[in-house]
Structure formats: structure tokens, C-alpha cells
Length: 436
Image (tube, rainbow, N blue to C red; front, top):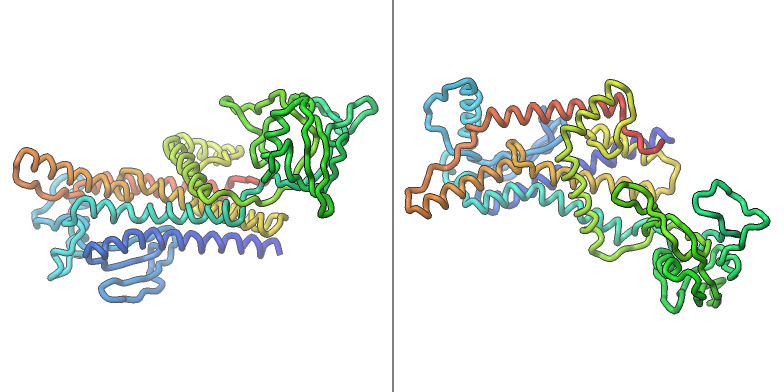
């Protein structure tokens, strides 16, 4: 059964990856067609063709390796002038120009990508990453507002019998230990918090905030018990406690240390549950993920070096480091096979898929060819040259011939392939383990 669940997790992530790639390419396809560009192919995957069908002038299909996708637009670059290209990388440039020329169909010379206004070219190239961002926001909105984030609810899970000093290793109450305020007040497991000090509480975080701000102050607390409201008086004591967030996790300072402060304390804990959040929370979560992925990309050379070191030495990998598709699939399988409620596992899988789309969004914005960000830079440079010529009343310059950047593009592609190979090997030999 565990193996079956593991496979279900992998299949879920493969389907999600395929959907993400498909929507990414649709983000390019739709504006390209709206702007009149001839699109010859829309393909999911690379390598040998598995299936395809031509609809109108476009061939739609799937290829064997589901690690990406592409659309083939007519005339990504200006047509070549037929003159041979000399130099060390001349043959690469010539091959790129020949391949580009083949996409320009007879009679459709005016339906080429490079003739579009700069702003339209940018929209076409940003359409793919933006689709991944939109999908991520939808996923995180479903998680946060549809299902809810796991945090303390208003239902009391347990009441501490006595007050134990912060940081103590003592696990049981001794004879001289003072009773906790919650125990003295008569709070019982299963009680549902209604209000504290006249303020209605929506979750345990609300109750904690009121209690921590009221050491030594007697508070009127209303709980629902067996369907009836019960009024209790409770007086929080002053105690050193580790501050926690809404999810019950310790809050950390700038140095990564847990924040300990003197606050009001009563000695009760909450049942954890999925609490729906405001509608904008999903967008906030996506924004936080964008920032984290951005930081990871900035630190990517160091992170890749650490992955290589861990691969050679067998040391534990950084769980916040980069992963390949293989690594994401393994994590999905492990999540699906864990001994946890189905909803909990589904939430983690959806979160992984949302994070994957954020990674696709940010990574494709890197301003290097062959990534989408590189094409945006080419379009912007073309626009700057044209604006400069117009400003000084000069003839419009020839369109930017990005085939001259093929050597750089090849270098970037080789680096990306090498990076992918390193991560795939590491994810097989020394995978990230989040469940130790």
C-alpha cells in the first residue's frame, strides 16, 4: 500500500508539472496568435514525438521527455542575408539562422515575431512565466482560503495542571508546583473559546494575543461547553515563554534564535486545524515564495557547490536547497506515503506544486537566452536602439539579430544541462529528506 501511495504522489506531481508546462506555453501561444504571429508548433516535452495533431496552421503534441515545452513562432529573429558567418562560432550562428529562416513561411513574411512592436514581444515572452505565477496564486489561494492554513483553533486540546519554568526538563507536576491559571479557572479539554475580556476570538492566536498582553489582570472568559456558554474568570501569570506564530511555530529573531519574553500565561493548548484565511492570503504566500526563490537563485552557485560537496561526502543536504524534477517527485512520493490524514498530505502536495510554479516563474525571468527573460532583454534593447534613433532623427536601425548571441546561448544551455544533471544525480544518490 505504501508503494502504491508513493507512486500516486509521483503521478500527481507529474500531472501537475505537465499542467504547469502546458499553461506556461499557452501563456506564450495565446498572445502570439492574438498579435498575428504564425505559430508552427505547440509541444509539451522534448525528444521523440509521442503524439501530435495539426489544427489550422499549428501542430499540437506531446514529446517523450516531460521536462519542458516550447512553441515555434515564425521569425523569432530577422531573416539571414545569405552571407556566410565567419569566426570560431560561425557554424553555430549559421545553423541558428538557417533554422530561423525555415520558420518563415512563404506568403507570411509579415507574420513574424521580430516585426512586432517591442511591447507586444515583451507580452508574448512574459506570458509564459506570468501563467505560472497566476497558477501559483490560484493554488495558494485554494490552500489558504479554500482549505485553510493549519493553526490553533478555538477548541481547547489540553490544560496544563501546573506552571513549569521555561526551559525546564521537568515533564510532570511536583507537589509544590503552583496550579496553572487555566486549571484554577476550570477550563476543560474540549471547551470552545468564545470570547476573552469581552473580545470575540476567531482562533487560538487571537486568544494568545489577549492573554500574553494581560499578565496579572483578571479576565472574563466565555467558553462553549456541551452547547452552552460558560463564564469563567482567569488571571494570567507572568512567565517567560517562547513566542509563537499563528501556526504554533516558534518566532525567531534576526539571528535565528527563538524569541523568549515575559508574557501572560494561563496553561492551555489548542487543537490544530485548517482555518480559512482572507482571500488575499494566497497572493501574499505567492509573493513570499517569489522572494525565497529569488534569494535561492542569487545564491545558486554556492548552493550547487554545497550539493556537489554533499554528493561526494554523503553529508546531509540543505532542505532549502535546489531540487531537480526527480527530487520534487521523490518528495511528492514520500509525502503521499506518510502516515498522516489524507487532507494533510493533499495540502503538502498542492503546496509543492505551487512552489514549483513559483520556481518556473522566477527562473524563466533570468535575463539570459534561451530563457524568456533573455528574449525580453533582446526586445528591450531593440526598443532602446529605435527610441535613440528616433530621438536624434536618424533612420530606424535594423532589428537586433539575436542569432549573434548563439555562442552565449549555448554556454547558458550547457550550464543549465550540467546543473540539471548534478541535481538529478544528487536527488537519486543523496536525496533531501524532510521526514527524518
